[in-house]
Image 1 (cartoon, one colour):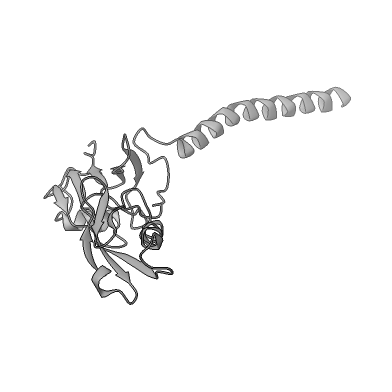
Image 2 (tube, rainbow, N blue to C red):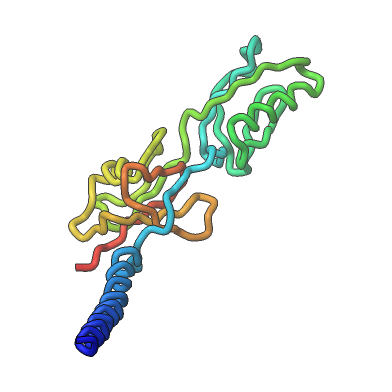
Length: 200
C-alpha cells in the first residue's frame, strides 16, 4: 500500500513538472506575440509643442493706442518682420508671446515708454502630404489639424494605403517618425506627412 502511494505521488509530480515545462514556453511565446510590435508599428504618441513662427507666416500686430504701428505683416525669408518706426524685428523661431515681447522691447528704445503689444498668427505655413493619398501636395494649415483631417483634405486614402501608421517630418526636423494614424495625432504647420503603402 505504501509503495503504491509513493508511486502515485512520483507520477503526479512528473505530470505536473512536464506540463509546467511544456506550458511555460508556449505561454511566454503567446505573450511575446501579443506585445511584440511589428516592423512598422508607431513608436510614440505625438505631442505638438507650442508653435514657433517661421518664414511665410502672416501675423497681425496691434500696438494699443498706436494705429500707425498696427497691421498685418509677413515673416520674410530672413526670419524677420519689417515694422513701421522700429524696422526689422526677429520673428522666426519665437513663440507668439516671445515675438510680442521682442516688439515691446524695440518700442521701449526711445519710442514708447510702456507699450502694450498683442500679436496673432493669421496664416500659418502650409503642410505637405505625400504617399498613398489621392491628391498629394501642399495644403493650407488650419488650427487643430489632425492627420485624418489632412488625409481628407488630400481627398482620402488610395486603395494601397496603410491606414494604421503615418510618418511625419517636422519643418525643423532631420527625419520622419512613425505615429498612430488616429484622430488624436496632430499636425503642425510646415509638417511633411507621408502615408505608406500596406503590405498585402
